[in-house]
Image 1 (spheres, one colour):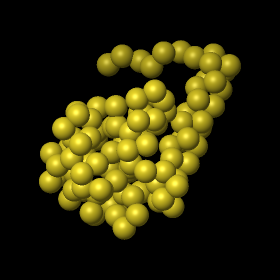
Image 2 (cartoon, rainbow, N blue to C red):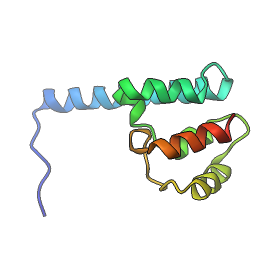
Image 3 (cartoon, helix red, strand yellow):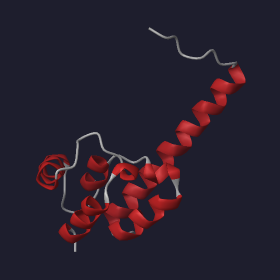
Image 4 (spheres, rainbow, N blue to C red):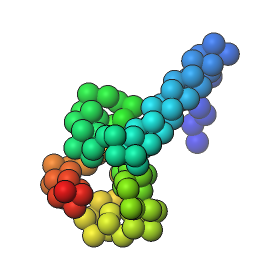
Length: 104
């Protein structure tokens, strides 16, 4: 089994800061979806250029949609044929269109 790379304290701190920033950006995007300030199509467009948003898990994205929770999100993903660990950047064009059609 390979060992994780040895990081200096400075490198570790930078990595922690990047991870915290990613969590903050993703949480903000989900909150905007929940309140209706951001649409799903806008978020998907933003994910094309923003790596932090593109790394958001699809299940978490669907669960953040108004009127949808974790159980509905799992069912919808199964219905649309989206793997449970899929992230936005990994969605195919048909899957994106199916999601947009569902929430239209």
